[in-house]
Length: 131
Length: 280
Image 1 (cartoon, rainbow over the protein chains, first blue to last red):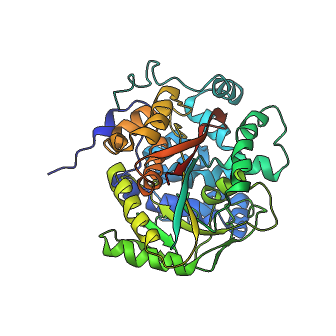
Image 2: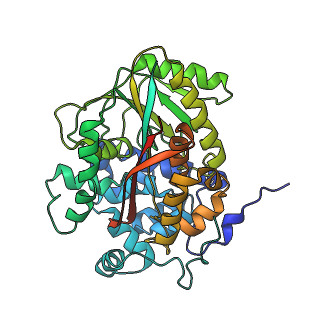
Image 3: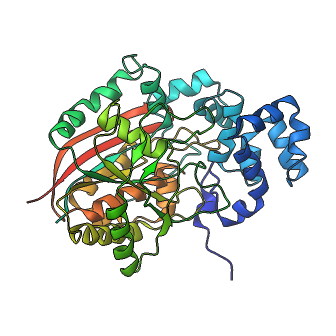
């Protein structure tokens, strides 16, 4: 018996479920280590060497080096953990969100000021069901 | 006896805390948001509780993937603002209420809700931003706070119905505490937002407005919203709204809406806020 995962079809959205959490455990643990300033300093001085201390896959390490957040999410990264990477880079949540949408930060910020991404747009989602 | 006087719902966007800590609240981007909380602070000055039971989620701060409690209650004397990677927020230490927290723990577990008991925990922006929004920037928080952390990071969070029923059990526990205390319950997080993937930036005002309406007048209908509907319509992080249902479950069936505020955007998020007073 497999689990029902009705959320798999939602466009542009990856749900951090138990399977992804298992896949991403070491990646997310690496991210968590960046909460400590000593670790941030070691990571910044030699990213590759620091990553090699963790039991991550090569793909996950490459994703971190490239700051490819969409890829890291596919590989089991969770956004609240990945936030430790862009915080270490001195980047905001809005910056990271913009990179994942493929928009410039300016265009993304403007979209938010205009009310955000519509849930009705193509690639978004259907109109709300009745509550 | 302890008395539950009111419930408050409030988003907990980290950038709101940063705006306050860095003195940016009068800037054009932030001013409309903080104006929306001015009536709340006036109401709060007249209705300061002895204890706030504050429902929030930890954001990979106190809990990593090493341990993920679905429901965790803070029973300590105090909780320090966490260093989330850029130093702790310059806000007061949060003082707990161990006697009431322990009482609620025992009562709620005996009502079949298996809480995780936490006696040492730092609290992140999920807890401190709502305190800042409601109380401003005092030297010390004007009341005790019982932190109650809900897992909404690793899917699945508890269902809306589970949260609502838990709220009812928390209410029974508060009602049976033998001390003259005014207690408020706050549900935080939400409203619609998505922080990840190509669909980041999603906001659904229509969903949020309906949710606020039903929260006041027909909360049981909200308990039937499945997780997938939150994710599809309110964004992957909009699922935090299940935490509001714990708050609402603890209140009377009929409540009085004192204040409502809705604002887009705070960074990536739709901010929703409502104050509900219990009936007499």
